[in-house]
Length: 119
Image (tube, rainbow, N blue to C red; front, side):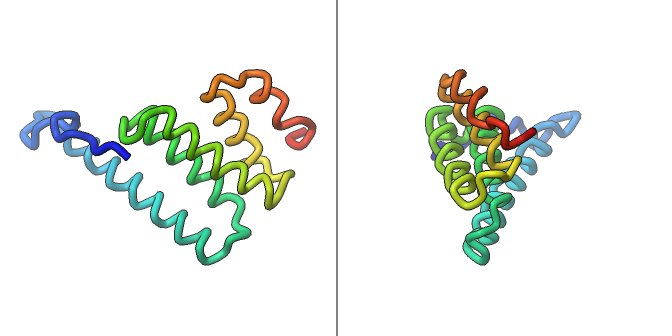
């Protein structure tokens, strides 16, 4: 996991406060990651928790720059595959698996993965 350098956040004296808001959003994303991990620890059958962790990792890679895209994609695919294994008909898990496959460059898999499960 990469640490976002302070220069990305901007200075505390930003006139419009964008630097401070960005820092707060990163902190909130980390807190969300911890809470979804705790929810899975408490209830390993909570499929939405796996899908949300996948989304958070993709955000870390694509928006926040806190993980490389390859790290984010691998983590997202790992979490969503766990969710799909628990409930193959869960639309969140299937959708996030399609997104993770797309981010890996598996465009055919991304389109065919949901199958008829989301219809």
